[in-house]
Length: 64
Image (cartoon, rainbow, N blue to C red; front, side, top):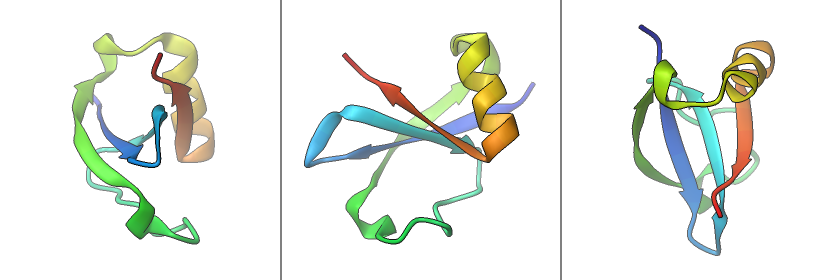
């Protein structure tokens, strides 16, 4: 089963960024603004979020 890494921006903790496990954040202009916050299995995420990650390589999510 696919897994995804979650990154949180401490300045905007209500916004999460998901990428495939191990992909890191090489395409972000300021990856240092994001902190790793754990890994989630595909079954733990909404299907539309998984689809956006697979299509775009990443997906933002409202963490509220």
